[in-house]
Image 1 (cartoon, rainbow, N blue to C red):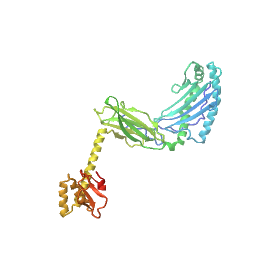
Image 2 (tube, one colour):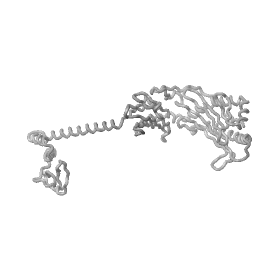
Image 3 (cartoon, rainbow, N blue to C red):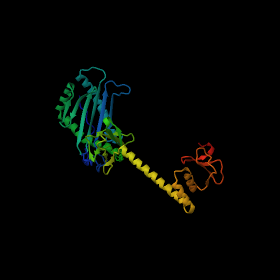
Image 4 (cartoon, rainbow, N blue to C red):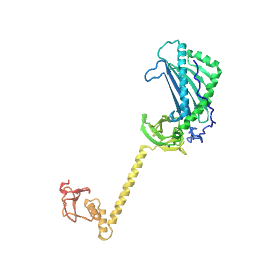
Length: 407
């Protein structure tokens, strides 16, 4: 078996570490700030290639297939230019020819005849925020690991006895290991930058996170607090619960960052608490779009109801004061003021409310006799005592309509 030749060589661009900042949560969580590079990136970036060859192709399953994945929060291999397409096409043609030969070699190594067999290869590189580089070459045969490259040791690692022959052959030629290391540390990193350059418009998006805090009953009288963080981009985010202002990462359960389906990301962090002991909990979020950490406190339901009750009480008080002001404005001078005072002094009586209504709406006057069943008075328009009137009930309520139909 022979190693796959590396893609076209290129000289790497000047490297630069991506600076980060210590998390303001006091956890040492690194939430990277984009560096002054093109494109501005934060978080690990990787370029990966996937090849697969089969011995018996069929409809929907070609003899050879390959894919390129540039991974940094949603940037993929579609963001490429003509040079990249030409290079990838050349790589695939070379890999297809090599795979045919290697399949035959592996069948002999495992004493296999015909039948369906697969050969897979994945390789690529990764660049961290601090400038550290990593890479890998991994071969698989018939769905199992076959041989891989240990970049740190510069040697090949056989997964089983069948791969020992290939390992010995490749280790004997030190130029193979040196060639693969150079590709992973230099050429691959350069092409990673090229792919990301084509996707920089997407990478430069900045969407701040939105935070929602909720709670639900849990076991044994405990309560589970949930902090949902969503709508943010880029993907880097740090979420932790604070207890009395102090981060408790060991008690915080992280649910991972996943795509939201609209180009942004979401995540969730939960914590189980005993509300009878402590209720001072806050969800704290860090994101590159935020100048400082975003803190959203948990408000127990009892406190929420208290706040709602206070608001309703204030509204009722305001309405009562407004009604009194209107009433007193109608009681301006002379007999109206005296009548108003007497009526307000007997406000418990239905006729008192009827008198107040007459002061507020002078266009209505009492009928000679109360004609509504169960009512204390019927008030008719002064202009014409027609079929519609104001009916006053025993509890002071009123309604419009023919008095004879009221009960």
